[in-house]
Image 1 (cartoon, rainbow, N blue to C red):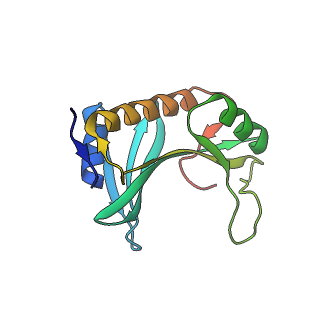
Image 2: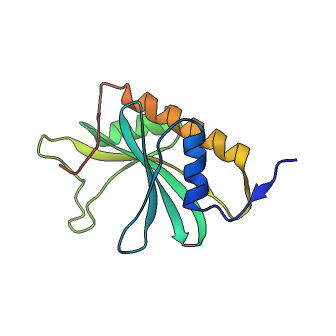
Length: 150
């Protein structure tokens, strides 16, 4: 039987990303938020560690995209695809995040939790599944992958 790891660290998760052939850069900001940055299919994405170091409770895989009709796009994605699409609202203004060109920000993400344990094999399958999601997003012509705020 495969061994379950309950205490997944950014280093361990980044190692899984690297093992399937992608770069994984671990970053920590001044607020002690930790994430892993990567890219596949030309599209940047990240894994945000959830909770506090060293006892992370999970991770959220995410990619941000700019689309013309955010609610239709998100609802269609949520009915047909893997991962959850969320229209992003600016917390300061309660307005939908909109770029100068009139497009709107949507984030597609998938969360995993560590509290019940996670085998390395299952973590690898999750990473590969996420990369397939990212690459399918990168191929779409109805959006632009967000690389920086507009």
